[in-house]
Amino acid sequence: MEFNVNSPVLFVIVALIIAAVLGQSVYFLVKAVKRAKELGIKKETIKNTVTSSAIFTIAPAVAVLVGVVALSKSLGLALPWLRLSVIGSITYETVAAGNALEAAGMSAGTTVTDPSIYVTIVWVMTIGIAAGLVLVPFLTKKIQGGMNKIGMKDKKWGEIFNNAMFLGMISAFLGYVFCDVGTIVSGDFSGLIPVCVMATSAVIMAICGLLATKCNIKWLTDYALPISLIVGMASAIPYTNLLS
Image 1 (cartoon, rainbow, N blue to C red):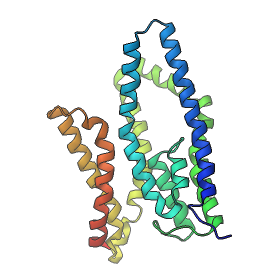
Image 2: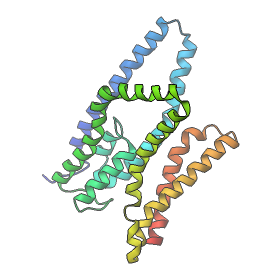
Image 3: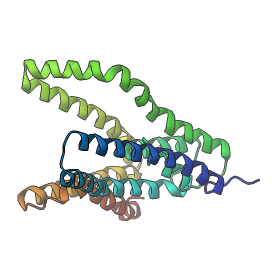
Image 4: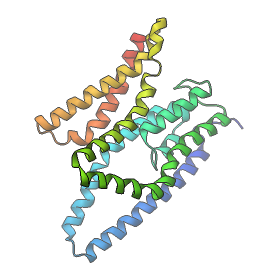
């Protein structure tokens, strides 16, 4: 039987896994509401909390949807749907899938037809993100305790340390963006495409931030990420035509 990235069997497996995750979410939601009532919290407060939380999930969901669409050309809908619906991260999954495709000699946007390559990509996308599930229970308390101690001794250095850790994480993805810039030496400007896309997204994010703070458009705070992602991805089209 010919392998198909959109095989109904894959959708059934993914649907069962996501159903189990949704079942856990509903279970803990019911337990939380029950506990809130036991604590004497007003029904109106509980209702407002649940409603506002549900509304604010729309913004990150749009960003996730962009990631699913971006990966679906090569990997079909089932795998991106699974990876970005459970513990996946759009910043990690897209890079991991891209690296795996490149290692297999394929370019982004090329549909995977070899099941061995597909399984390899699944492992690359899964093992890396699953490491957090193993490390968090053992290391988070110690790391958080150390950061709290630094903050208590010197608030300024505590903030610097937090920012440094965040920038360290971001720098890992910057390497992926700038890795092909050197091709301009040989007259190939395609290596600038990711840089231009990143710069465009950054500008859009800054504009959204300014509008949210200076013009008091608060809803932009929640939708700045998906807006910058969508505009950045759309800008890749003219940049590719111009620089390729």
